Amino acid sequence: MIRRIAIFSIASACLAGCTTMAPSYTRPDAPVTATWPTGPAYRNNAAQAGDPAASDLKWNEFFVNPQLRKLIALALANNRDLRVAALNVEKSQALYGIQRAALLPTINANAGSSVQRLPADVSGTGQSLIARNHSVNVGVSAYELDLFGRVRSLKDQALEQYLATDQARRSIQISLVSEVANNYLTLAADRERLKLALDTLESQQASYRLIQSRFSAGASSELDLHQAQTSVDLARVEVARLTTHVAQDENLLTLVVGAQIPVELLPTVLSSVETLRELPPGMPSEVLQRRPDIMQVEHQLRSANANIGAARAAFFPRITLNTSIGTSSSQLSGLFSPGSLAWGFVPQITLPIFDYGRNKAGLTVAERGRDIFLAWYEKAIQSAFREVADALARNGTVGEQLQAQQSLTEATSESYRLAQARYHGGVTSYLNVLDSQRSFYGAQQALISVNLMRLSNQVTLYKVLGGGSE
Image (cartoon, rainbow, N blue to C red; front, side, top):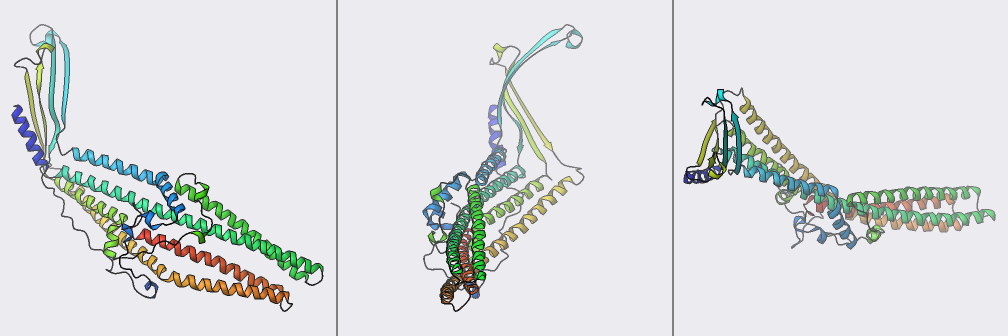
């Protein structure tokens, strides 16, 4: 009998390796073009020979600023969203382990004793008696022979869910790296704006004191004095506003990093941040299929496809087995005596006959679930294509915009200098000086914004091309 049970266990394991009734999976065609958009906005995106793909470029190779590198490393160690994502991966891995274990018989050992007094009228002997039974058994309980692949389909579904969760973690890490970098750049830009506003306030206060002296000497009008006072007050308002923005930027960066940021890791001004590496766009089919968010949705699609196999198997019989072998005796001393062998073999088959459409509805649910994930997969590819195309469009034009803004800043600087000279020479009013000063200040602030946009777009392009996961 022991030999029979061993043979049965081996046969059960072989049966568990049967194929499933899930549909054959084929990766859907991407609902986007095979090339990135072309036109005036994309002319500066040509790749250089030997350039690495973004997904192959580690984040500490892309970001060359040492402060930013340390800040990203601190965020990867402390950010709570990334920590939750990692825990979800461990949880889904454990759930997959549970489902995978159902493919093989679970062997349990149990021992028990029972003592029971039977009264005379039910004992069958006409006298009361005390019945004792002691047993030790090893056996398989409620093991399903996976003849139609139901359990294996559920195992495949759990595996794909685990893989999807791992890709979700990678996607969160990419977003975190990008968010830390963009917040760092925004803080640097606002600090540079604040420095510019403070310098402007100091300049306006010096001009006010000069005009006040000229007014006292009768060389300037009261209108000039009030106009100078207005420019000082406007500069004070700007300083207060930007001081608030800098404080809020620091608070946001601390939240994203998940820990108190050392002062030495905070940026000073945007101009001190080194230029980031240029990236080739690559081919859409290669880029989009390597993005973790696309891979996540595809694993979910494969999971839904495997679930159809389980739903189809529900139409067929389910065979479960309960087996045991051991020893039993009325006395503890006789448990392992000759003749105490006890065994049991209880197969059970369940065949659905009338379920009032329950299994059919379950199959419909599984099929529609697969169709929903297919639509999500296609939408994810379209969204990813749009993200890359937008970043490439900005990358192709931001260089010209930066050059034009630098030229504009230089022109307004010269206009401001000439307006001041003409005012001091008595040729024009102080109002022209104020107009030139406002134009120069606005051009300087816009130059900071364009430079921030250029660096932020490089970070965004790195992110949407799938870089930063490791």
